[in-house]
Image (cartoon, rainbow, N blue to C red; front, side):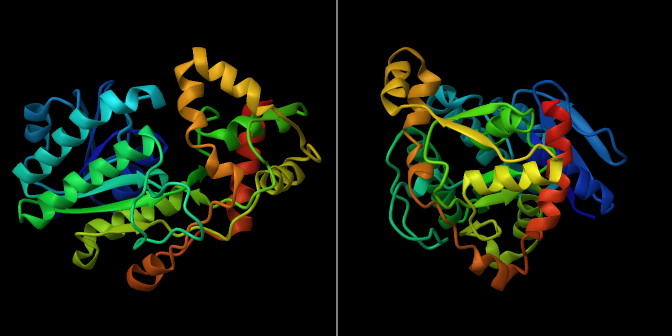
Length: 312
């Protein structure tokens, strides 16, 4: 039976390891801290994934290697991702494992219309450029016959296990579900695609198991877009906290903050995702691989009480 290696134990990495374990798979989880779910058939390994030799040792005998890692906050990406991505790619090549990378939509840039798996990458800032370069390097290795690769591209996460620090929506909900006013840093009334963590996991597993997926990126199937205000309103209705109160932070104040705070500066580079429609069309993933999104009502029913308890 195939052994799976998961690098990273954030919301997706932990959920992926749990799903594989529940399906009877043997799973190795690699993190710096030795964290991950404590479940049968899950072996937690403590190592720095940028250590190519150590990661290659951990990947021996593995059939599928999932890169669900994150080198840290936005300012760390430019320096942290290249050695991490290169190490994971080398480990997959050395072990013969299929490399399934958890990606995002930053590489598409602020183009018009819905994003699809076939749309060319056109990043507009450092964060998107880093992700695009990772994919191009992996694809080149695939095309050279050195390794089999694929990538799942997800939008902003939604789900009960998403931390309050993981994106703008959970941050806003931490305020609105506590009955407070949320300070929003972009237009809360633009349609936006939200991706369920469970659907990311389903897509990753499908990509690792189906050779039709290899050599290409795939978008994670998600529900029809909804605005920030609409999502907060639906969460509030389920949590009993009522209509969300939102206050828009002036952009000039954000730019001033960006001069001194690197995190704010990097966040400004991707705010186009909330200042205009940001919509992903993952119909190809559903049509070819059979992955479909969690029903919207079910997703919100699960998320609202978890986020409300955390806010309280």
